[in-house]
Length: 431
Image (tube, rainbow, N blue to C red; front, side):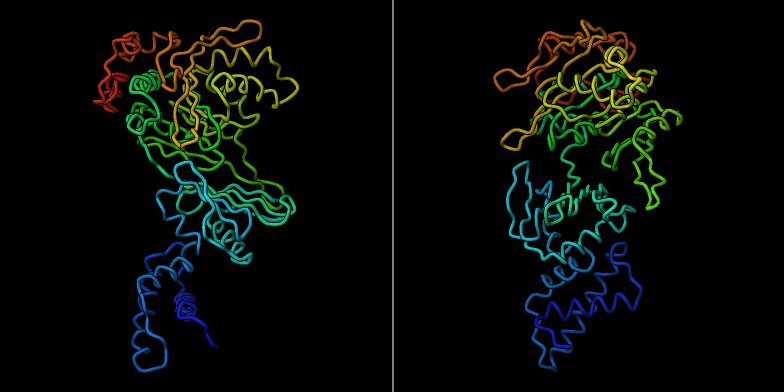
């Protein structure tokens, strides 16, 4: 067989060696690198005594072959770039990427067969399928990135692919302060709210940083607590010793075996949780989350919304999807008593994620409306202290936190740490 390029020859020999030695490229990347080095060494020896062209740049060639065999081909350069947060493909020759919240059309060009093969490879380890009966898929890639694919004829002509990378820019609230996402005082209050066991909802648009903030909030949970997380696809990474994570499951080809988010929330209550974290609420699972948070088990979650107040309104509406026997007369007061604090973020035009407001729910309703008050709001582009206070001040006292001093105008403005360290949080909450 005649090969046009050195790349094609080396790629073919590496693939043949992988087949003969039974190596799995996705689970044995180190072994694949060894085989590539072996093939390149053999090629270099043959090139000395044959008309084979010499290797101009062995390291670059090895990277290209590895990306094609064990990675995701031309997309791998974007997936390896730490500045890239998301990659999406509208059609094979139109591949976009977002760097720090700003999108751009990349120079990556694929063919239709390449794109189909890459998607098949991305789904291989997820256990999820994509076909005419299931034209949408939401799955986790081997590196932790979240994959979403839609195929024709739901799309007009080409499959639409979104890869949201798990880019962790912050693990704790103090790191969000350093990134300019929020002020030190706001971060200290949120840390105190988590230590005290308040129920916190994170709201914002797509790519506003909801999952990152939820991760950072959960990092403030005292270490001795048992945390159960439920998500459509695993995204949360909570650095605590006692964590159980669960994700939904698609139905089989026979239409059986589906596990919904509603089911997971109910199962989580049977697992002795100290906290329940719902990754993202979109539909009728909002009812189960509210019931769980109203059962004495504190927790947190996220929801798409344009403001904190719209998030509360949405949580008053989504549970109605659970059935005709669910009424606003039940849902509205349940929201008022189950949710304590709502944090709203926004992705600015510059790509900067910022907390725009932190709102408290008093637990009361008036004329079928949930009573809310601002704890922090944005004025002249800056997040500043408003005049509201959170509910359940007794919980802060039991945790050894003076929330009045924390929210006072005399709160220290220095950048040396926050209110509590993780270890101190655990001692005060459990001591």
